[in-house]
Length: 289
Image (cartoon, rainbow, N blue to C red):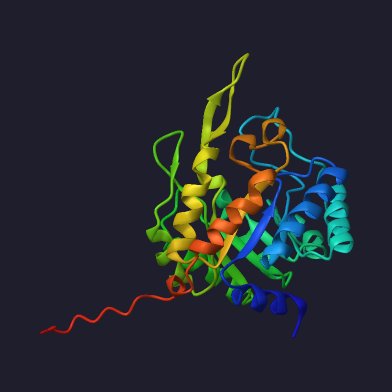
């Protein structure tokens, strides 16, 4: 069995859920190693399978002035250092087909950004790496769209695919999470992940001094969305975590404080239900007590 299928099977079997977690973007090698060390210590203590997450390039920033990260070459070197230093699988995102081959040599999971969840060429290029593919549902998409996106991965010969709910646009500067999507996305016949941090973004909802806008967020509601997701019964939790969220260069308002990670995960493990991962069998035959 190849390493991707082995990891995929381990994640599918995780109880009560697996975790994809890390800072939004690679700020420096020292920072990434510090975060990986601390997050691994927490998840190891709790017995949760961890895939470390960070991005080498945030190509879809609201502003052209926003920090994007170190870029492909340097970013992959840093993620490889995480793998070798802490023996952790890693997940990172791609935005262009030409990135997939290089990313596939390092990443264990390749993530497709929500804006690009229907881009056939990108999905196929990612699938052909043989790595696990995590497709985020577009903020503009119905959950049924993910059935087609997952099928594109499989048609390329890769069965290791998962889909991720990250909220739905509600007006111009807000997102909502519809818990029904956690159930409906199971029609894609693959693991379902809940992104509990991006789903609380307020896109372009924060005015900047001197003009322009950036994404805001509702960090205080992250536990609310997380509790809902694990109560419904998702397979995995995706969350961005930072040791100093107020100084995070990207998506600071929706990164969860590292100091509270263990506390939140303990609560979620206590709430999580395995039965929620299976549809309830409803009997509609007449009932006469």
